[in-house]
Length: 131
Image (tube, rainbow, N blue to C red; front, side):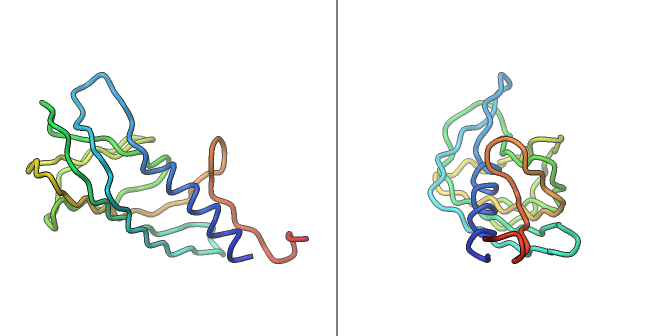
């Protein structure tokens, strides 16, 4: 059962951190590494996440990048181990990248009750639901 939970959570998180293209000047990223830590609360069907991306920042005129984080609440964003300014809407978090270094870390702390519609999703299964 744990393997099924972890697989679905991984699919959800992988989808959640994919970049989103917009017409506004958004900084592009080349993701080199993901570090994903999740605390799954089965009783309340919520999770607490701590994701760190190691990226190469692509040249751009803007100062924000966009990351998918559908329906979850961002608690804080850190860029290169410093608190960062960020914006959030229902689908995305937009961290501000003050320093545009080749190798940058973006850490996002978040929580909430993710959905399971569309590609990927978050599924909590009980042992009784497995064959």
